Image 1 (tube, helix red, strand yellow):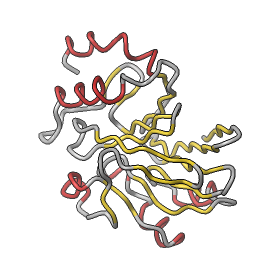
Image 2 (cartoon, helix red, strand yellow):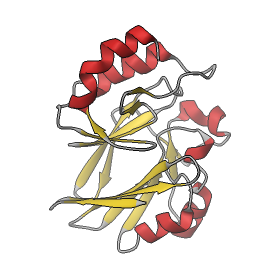
Image 3 (cartoon, helix red, strand yellow):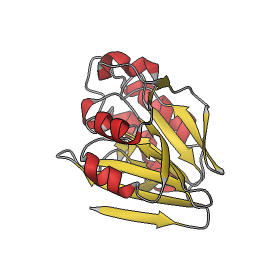
Image 4 (cartoon, one colour):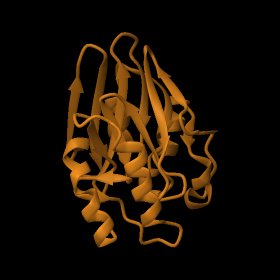
Length: 201
């Protein structure tokens, strides 16, 4: 399954890949065709096909869980581009990135600028990518609540702080593309946050 968002500035291809319904994205600048891949999670051939007609320069990774990394090596080798991830997830990924991601870093994609937000909680090195009004939230924010924090290295309090302090200041119309499944908006999710705190997940 896939869909495409397109306007005068950006083209976003979203692919649902692998057995865990991971979302993989190809984000490209309409003016220059320069692109990045967000979460080369699985099905490398489909991701590479989605890149046709663009010039990807990086694989950006929202966090180090194995299901978000399964196509990294194939895509990286085919396109000769680096794999980027926050360094706090090196132990979880069991590999270092070719280049680390930093909070508030800007990544140029042609004439566009993606912003990196460090949003720990699901994993210590979880990040989101912002290209207003688009938010690629990885496994930090989903329709109906935060990502899973059942692992020993996860923290429910921390993921809620990340969501409330770094994601919810965005406008209601911000489109949220999570790491799995359906999309949502900031305006749809923000009012429910007190209930998430109360239930503890």
